[in-house]
Image (cartoon, rainbow, N blue to C red; front, side, top):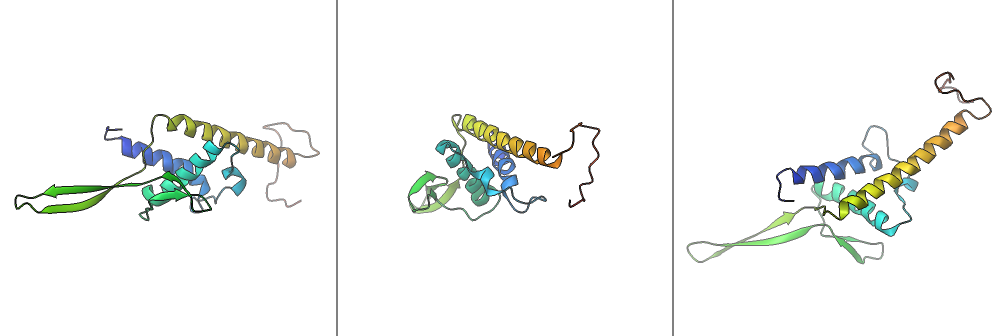
Length: 152
């Protein structure tokens, strides 16, 4: 965490994971069902990553706590530190500084599991769409010609 590349790595993870869930990515937002996970730990991690990306990494509208729909605090996303420096005149110079999102060693496997679950859901959706596309026709990968502009 003390390495100078740590902040860039965290920003990369947050932005890359969040991109399919945003509107302004060139393709549009994934359907909401892909942002729902049965495992509460995965759901919380998903929400935390999106919040961290939207409020700390890609935008400057940082908030202090992540709350559930009832307003109960779930996670601390941002820490504010009070920095006090005493000058030679004995007066204190006070300021705050933001400590951005941190990913601990225990969080990385959770993010990996989250990505694995998302990949499974997207793969299942892709398979269902391919089956529907070839409905009633023999599937010969690489040899079937399909007019994707055909509405029928």
